[in-house]
Every structure is written in C-alpha cells, then in structure tokens.
Length: 47
Image 1 (spheres, helix red, strand yellow):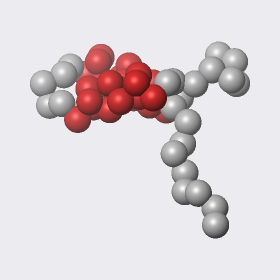
Image 2 (tube, rainbow, N blue to C red):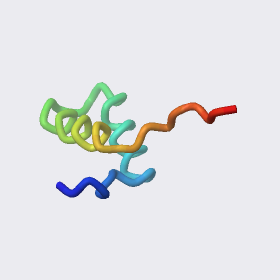
Image 3 (cartoon, one colour):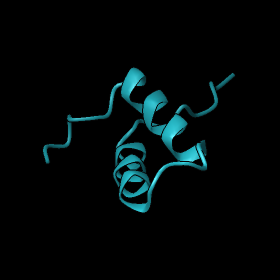
Image 4 (spheres, rainbow, N blue to C red):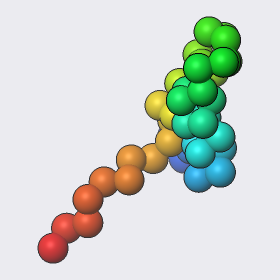
C-alpha cells in the first residue's frame, strides 16, 4: 500500500459503526479494524 493511500472519512465512519455493533462477526470486525488503522489521525490542532 502506498503511503498516500488512506481510508476516507465515510469509510472510517462505516468501519467505526461495524466495530461498535455487537451483531457483527469477527471477520467483519477484522476488516473494519484494518480500515480504521489506515485512517488518518484526527489529532489536536496546535495553538
């Protein structure tokens, strides 16, 4: 994977929803976790 490829905000939101949902399976959560690990950090804005 190239360094400039990141998970987009909509995909990260969907992955977050999968992780929070108790009804999803382990494979779905693994894929969602992978997507979230590639999402850019929100980080705090510097003053």
